[in-house]
Structures are given as C-alpha cells and as structure tokens.
Length: 340
Image 1 (spheres, rainbow, N blue to C red):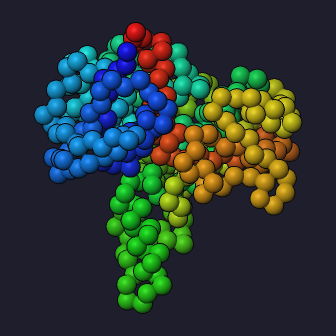
Image 2: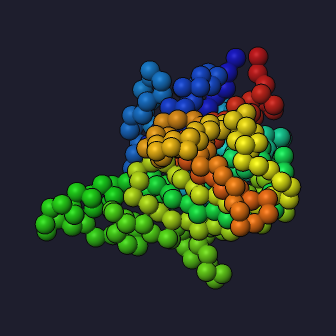
Image 3: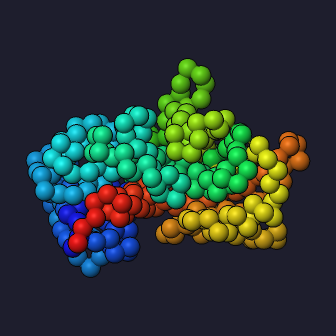
C-alpha cells in the first residue's frame, strides 16, 4: 500500500526533478498529482513511464492526500502550504519560508533524520538551501568524530540554483559574445555571468553579507550544531548545474587527513574521489544526475591547530533540492506514516 503524493511546481526545474527521483527511487506511490500555476495548466510532465497533465494549484483539494512536495517559491508556499497542511497533507517545502521557524523541522536525512518526528506541529517539513544541504552531509561524520569549532566556506554555485531564466541567460550571453551585435545584457543577474563570476547571491544584509551567506550559517546551526561558528562567501559561477564548495574546518580534537578520508568513505550520501594527481577529483560536470555528495582534495591546514581543507561538489537540483525532499518523504514514510 502506497501514498497519495502531490508535486506542486511540477513544471519547474526542481519540480520535474522531484517527479524523476520519485520514479527512480520507486517511492511507493498509489496516486500522484502534478500541480502548477494557471499559466502552466495542462502542461505535460513525465513520471517514470507515465505522462501527467498539470492541475491548477489554486483550486486543488489536498484533502485525502498524504504528502505534498512543494517547489513553488516562498510567496506561493505562504498561500498554499497552510491550506495543504490544514487538510492533513504533510508538506515538504523547498522554499526558504519555513526553514527558520522553530516549529518546523529542517531536515537532511543523512544528518538529522530524527527531526522529521516534529512534523506534526505544523504538518510542514522544510528542505534546506542547496549549498547548505551538501555541506552538512560532508561535515556531519567529521563533527561526530572530532567536534567542529569553526567553518570557513566559499561556494561556487551554478546558475540553475537561480531557476530556468538564469540558465537561459548564461546560454544566451555565451552565444551572444561570439556574435557581434547580439550581446545579451544582464537581467536575472546583476552583472554578466558568461565567462565571469559574481560574488553576490540573494540580497545584501546590513551586516554586509548576502542572504545566501546568512542562510548557510543559520541553517547549518539548526541542522547540525548551533555551537559551530561559520562564515561563508557565496559566488555565482558560469556553470549550468552543480554547486562546488571549498571548505576549511577547525576541529576541537585532532583529526588527521587519512582518518578523515576513511570516515567520509563510510559516510551515508558521500562519495570520496581524492587522488593526488591530475584529474583525481570531482568537478560539477561530473556530478550532474548523481545522488552523491562528492568530496575531494582532503588535506591538512597547517595554519591552524586541528584544521582540514576539503572540496565538496553536488548536483544542486538533486541533493540540493529534489533528492533531499524525496529522501525526507522516504524518512517520513518509514518513521511516521507507515502504511500496509
């Protein structure tokens, strides 16, 4: 016996990935509904070997449905998630709206699966920011062994994290630079993204950090350990899919690079590719379509006591969004909503 599942935002990049991953992982679905805004009403999307026609999110009745995966942005989530929750349907939300609500669990199943047990307070579970999700998967097993004091992370985030318009802008700008008179001015981004990097994701805060950087700090503390000190610099790069992170970690206890490598090799959700030779590491292109969070370049930091550096890469549309949401649904099903 399976579940009645809703995917809201089914025509977007993340929504389509949610449908793909539900099918790939053989999530026990008895019935599935693909929802979208009225402008996308009737659009066909794939679910395994089936084709679904999108239904209207605005008029959909969530009563009798078990789980709703939301990928519709904060504004629409604010309107429709409480409606679904009030109908008894558990919402797993990919937006930032509920991540910092103390009554809403923020979950990465490899890190804090037990947190799903708190879903009943609001019938909502939050999915973390894409850059946070992959980082905490890599940090968790190391934290369990040697207790992390401080993290300094620099991100190299693909344009897909900013949606389809951002992907189109990178593509069009790249083509336009080779054709005189067909240059494409920035619209989605503040500056040219083709052949460039932009140290600005989300809005600037009074502190001087961007909201994306603040998210990584706040979410890591909520998911992993509030005592960890974190500072982040988040950068948009001209890559279509796949986020990369250079992470510097300071531990309370000594942890040498060999033991860290062994720990990460055994960690759930992590794949270590770390050869000290040309090409002995993973890049964003190689992680596209994969479930794992890849870790490379594991090495000691001689400038601090108990320091390590590592390189972390993951498909942001998967582990950073759709895959993590489906894993939350799987955890919810096995621990809280058992059927059959």
